[in-house]
Length: 318
Ligand code: R5P
Image 1 (tube, protein in one colour):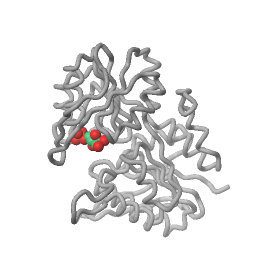
Image 2 (spheres, protein in one colour):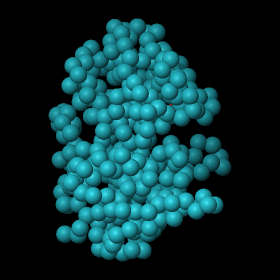
Image 3 (cartoon, rainbow, N blue to C red):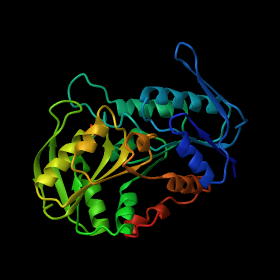
């Protein structure tokens, strides 16, 4: 069996450190610096020849820097004759540009897939892709985990009841419906429109929220516009309280002010993006580090990952 080495890019050192602790490993030392003109320099400071690498890097802001850094680290590892290069990318940026909507637009998610594969990654592990089909953009093994069981587990262990699980748009219905069935709760769907990029409005509510604890579950909280609009209309429809569960807390622009002003009693995030606890201190963060450590351990030992999908048997245990 090849040796295992964990390498962290600079996007999320805290998550990488916590994963390493969970695996009782030390992170492989790496030098990452910027030249004065902004170009990136990388040197892996330990031999990796023949070893299996697990490279932890989210495509979080600054997304373009983190992407370029990721590609350069993969290149350095490949040229140093590493064994398998496994990319642990909890947040895969550019996933919202997954198709052409209008003429002369790119499909950036596919371009990113080409870049990552061409650089030399042998496997990609990620969480809550914006759309599942992005898996097909890659011709390398692709392990896609979902965040909703973590939220369901939290709500169960904190004894929340009389819930309604809300999808803030049509694209999120599958996620909300799976979470609803895990919690034995009804689903509510919002009909969201986007008049322009980064703007949203809710025009219809399908389902009943009156008197219930409404749980809005979304993959990305970016400007917070979708969530704020959703919370307002749900509250207007008579929800007792509104809880937000967001996997990737980008929190761009005025997101924190928008969320603070909205009628939301609790915000839960996963830690796929660094720094959300500082930006929005009232949010509770559920760490994915234990799950990611278990995934790395199982991949490295050639064990099935299906055994980690326990929520499919309705046992919320991770
Ligand atoms: C959109 O389809 C996504 O699932 C999120 O709802 C969206 O990216 C959130 O963006 P914002 O927070 O800017 O409204």
